[in-house]
Length: 414
Image (tube, rainbow, N blue to C red; front, side, top):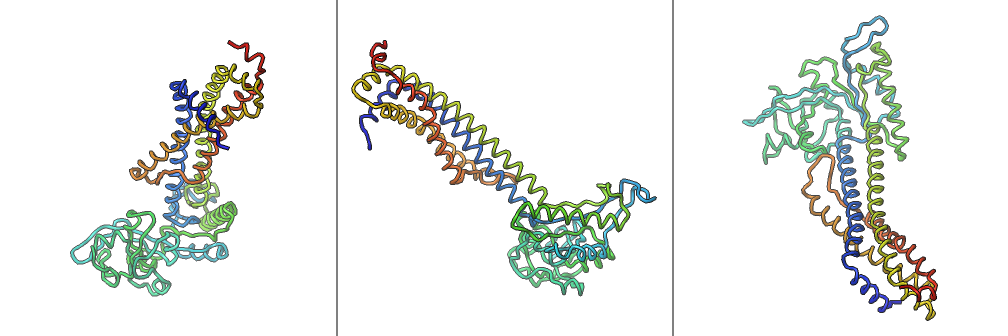
């Protein structure tokens, strides 16, 4: 039941100790403020990292080769390992049950592309139809590569949205002819990529066409896959690791490469990095919580101290109350209510200040790894619960001391 007299007492006590109460409340507000800011930026980092992984399929496995660095089976180091179509087909067959999407790649950097009087230098990638899903590319118009394009070596091109804007401006691109290194290609589609403009400055053409146009024979620059994802993240990581290890061993076996030569064959899978980074983010978030809570604890100690002082100053009053029949529970309730009130007001001030600051700076932060730092509903509710608990903890010891005051001793107190 609402007790107006008790509230009047609380405000009267606060009024008598304005500076002391303000400084104590400031420490609580600062703790909540710091916690909110830290958790907000933790959330922003998590969003940024997830967006970076969204550039490619989460379960992507990329494979490329380099130069051997170790002697093996009588073969000298320094051999350049070159992937071929046969390697791609062998891997596809061996890991057919685990692979979801696949593509062989042959690319050139800075290929000159013309359309009428417009031109630019772009990355040209020969690829298979699976490249759309491996790159998380979405079509804005037209279509992507299909198997017929690969089988027939058709001269079609799928251009990135940035390429379309620079070469075609507002003109429709699909169906138009562009020149890639002087050779005519029909634009079959336009794609966007979650990686942004950098990823959209690419042009995909059929792998078979690229090998013929650029005199590559059956050579490949790299191959890429995605594995079939499991609902269990740890199981997906384990499968991705097993497939990556199997592909690496297969290539090393085919080209007589030392098993411990880490340079000759590079296999990278996104899930491993995702697991490591997500684990790091969870650790960072835990550290932020610990820092924030310890800062709040410092404020709670201050509130507890001020309540002890208040109990000491009101010893005689509390003794009179008990002499007149006040129950220990009512004394405890009085002290706890005042403690929770001071903590809640200060805490909510820090909470609102932190949220307001995050809302103000969020649009101004444009970083690849920090996106829209803000506090979600769960965090806000958790913070409120911490406030209530902090107020109760801060008032518990003073309240217990007040409840144990003996009336006769209190009346003698000076």
